[in-house]
Picture 1 (spheres, rainbow, N blue to C red):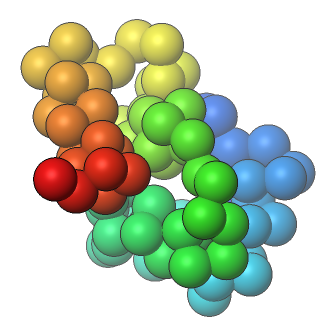
Picture 2 (cartoon, rainbow, N blue to C red):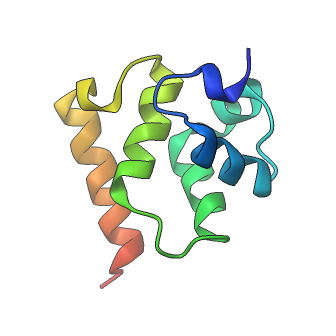
Length: 86
């Protein structure tokens, strides 16, 4: 399976994943959404919260809109901790 075949992964996000060395579904799954997101941030410091949701949804095989609220809140806290580490 290719990255683009996962939910939430379009051509642009697939290209960004390739740019940071995430070339396969297996690599994305092994890293997890948080580590993959942090790799993406090295190339795009303006990466948005939807991107980390998209990665997690892709890993779970669901649209990011359908993420469990608890998981979504965990990712939101992670994102804002990175964005504004006070």
